[in-house]
Length: 193
Image (cartoon, rainbow, N blue to C red; front, side, top):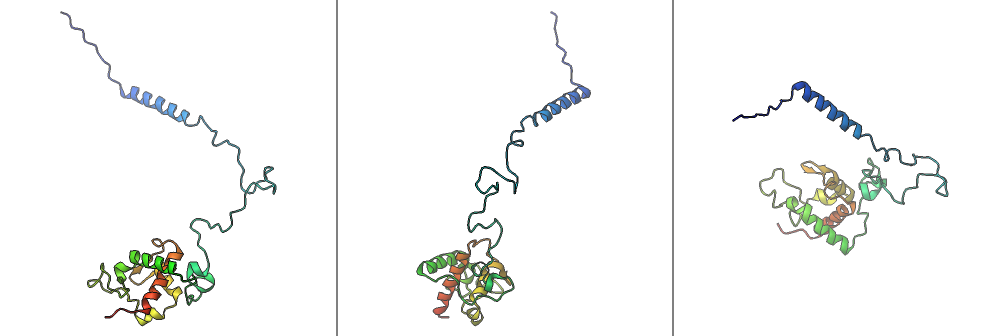
């Protein structure tokens, strides 16, 4: 019996290199085959257009549009008179305090503030009392009661002392003002010690 064995040739390093080079070239050439997206008809900024009646290709922005990441510079958004960062704090809440606003403030307060400041605002929250030092502020402290609402808004937004800012967590300025309205309602009826 004659045994036949097929000899397989093992690829040489030079052969493998040639194969890899040819494969890379083929892949490289296929990436530039379709330029339809690059060569499509389009208008550049401030270019003229016959399509629109005003002759401009760039369309005006929708009313009250604010660019992503841009901030409003008014008293509601900053808590400062005239909306200027170095201005004085607004003395009172610029939003009209309604039962709906107070309800929203109570809800947001329970979510974001009560853990540290306590459900009634006395600084004895479940997450920090009695082991946390320094203790969170009590909203019945005369210093806090005397604060203008704009300063409370600034503290909620940007933080102060050990409290970090909640601007990224309480994203709408209306919710932050609602919390302030609710805090002011709490201060009208301090809890018994």
